[in-house]
Image (cartoon, rainbow, N blue to C red; front, side, top):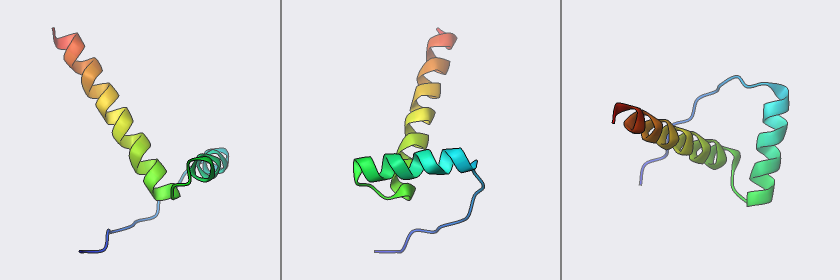
Length: 54
């Protein structure tokens, strides 16, 4: 199995605090939380776009 690639990104301090809290409460890593939230937002936007096309 290959190792996932990582990069650094800038986020607001308050957002980082919230991300840490979500990660702790869900017992996930911050990377996994960030990935999950981004995937959920992408799915939401795609669904919204599909509704607007109809």
